[in-house]
Length: 248
Image 1 (tube, one colour):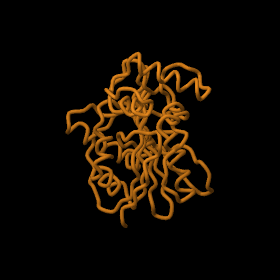
Image 2 (tube, helix red, strand yellow):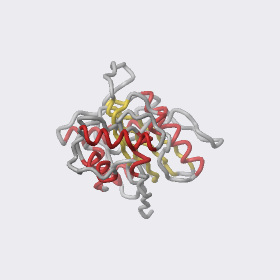
Image 3 (cartoon, helix red, strand yellow):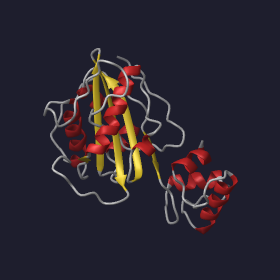
Image 4 (spheres, one colour):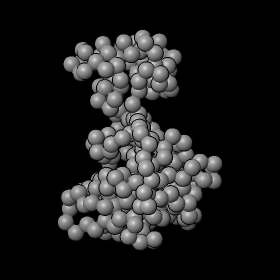
């Protein structure tokens, strides 16, 4: 099976690869996604173990599986399987709550080991796997006609989350295969006064202010002027809607 990559969606920054447990069906009769908690051999559990193994080996904390993210990722995996189309969830930013950074990776392949290898061998996806800012993950996988469709959603939460018995990190190793298909990962984080980095510099260039990568008073004023011009509430904060309008 040859590799197939999808273009990066506008308004999202490359970030860590993620997987969400299949919990809900989104369209398509006959699809039976399985929750990660259903079986220790489920695709979701297998991939979460492989993902966290790589993070631990590289000195990072393992990601914690969150049921809410599982539901979002599971629904999108079922949607892809029903439509037969590999794509990112365009509603991820609103489907997920309590976030300051989000990432999503989707792929389809013959088995989890092959998908694990594909994600790891892709520099962009590997960068997502090893992103230290993420602490939460959801994984969803649906099998149809011998093909596994998987969605991985990562989150850096805005506010702390109380751990529950159903929210668990895993670091069990997994064997990798060969055949795979993945898309370009996506990410966007909220930018506000005090933020720094490449995303800030990108916004600054689009707004024609000095692109030093530091979100200061001049950048905030430029964002507010942009928001007023587009009849948005002039908060001076670059959320998902403002980001897409500036960078799209």
